[in-house]
Length: 286
Image (cartoon, rainbow, N blue to C red; front, side, top):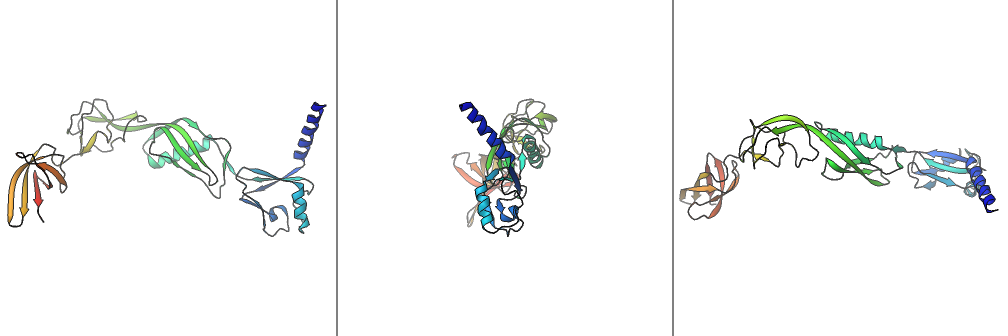
């Protein structure tokens, strides 16, 4: 008996679905002129998200008819199923968005999407569009993206491999050494490289020893200074009716027209002076 009751319920549900009229909309709200030819544009139901369906029962339909609507666009004896149009977001859609992001940010890098994880049943409205962007500054390896459809925000995970033609050391490079004759260009995977590969090496020096066969990144180099830490410089002191010339030792790399720390060779006292270039610095007492 119980089994026959379940069968009857199932038949009734199938019948109800088969006698339902589907109304498609492409906006946030259902209006009376979506249902009636003589509608005037009044809102009936709002908050329908892209890809979502909502059922309007016959009791509510009768309520509408009692308000004086005369020209329905559907069989008034049927259930109404209101479906919001929306574009479904699938894996291929997200992959294309990822490729687009990388073309904009890293036009000279080829990427491979090794793995991707996205939620199911995501839709968006074409009239509102969507936002897709990096969530942080991790661009290779495990990467997270933000997908916003206006109605919801989703976190998309992907494992991204990157390939690029970069400078690689042909031999060991010592600290403060120029790289010009010590590197060559190779196409390599940069997924696990720390820092960003250097684009230009003609005016940089190694800030620490770089081993052979190592990708040259910004973590290894600095702009070539005009004088190196430890170099002797001539320091001029200019005050009111006073002009002194002395020797000093640079306590850091020096760049022209920048202030630098200098030590007195005898007293070891540290002071700041403006580096002028040509192993000269000046202290001006205002």
